[in-house]
Length: 148
Image 1 (tube, rainbow, N blue to C red):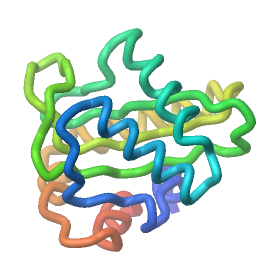
Image 2 (image 1 turned 45 degrees about the horizontal axis):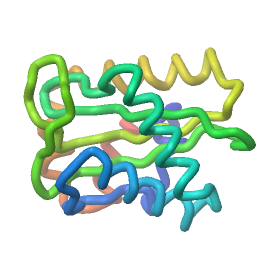
Image 3 (image 1 turned 180 degrees about the horizontal axis):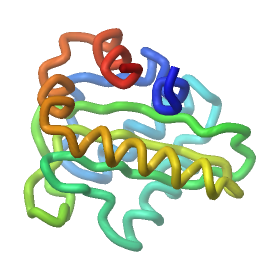
Image 4 (image 1 turned 90 degrees about the horizontal axis):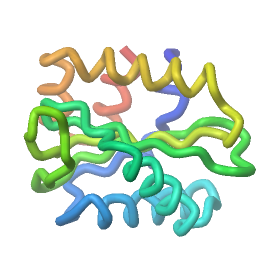
């Protein structure tokens, strides 16, 4: 199993999420991680928002990889979110974002963090992969795509 698949349980796949803004996506992601991992929603939101202030995590092609460091987190975890409608994300190509991989890493993570981001960027650079994610019918299919 690859690195990304290990971070992404089916319960961390949200399809058709209604969120009209970046802020709302970060709130929803915080709620997901609080429910599933016991990480404070506020801590997740603040971490993602602080990173976003440094520069957009939008990659282009309708994709973003918001990420943040979480004090006390033992191992990296992630969530895939496909929005019902794309939102503005200040991506380099100016396109709105509809697919996000939210990554949380331990506060001191460095090499693993960069390795995961690199793998995600490589996967999302593949047009066929993006298209399959855009039409995946359920969480199990999304997880299989990340496992391939």
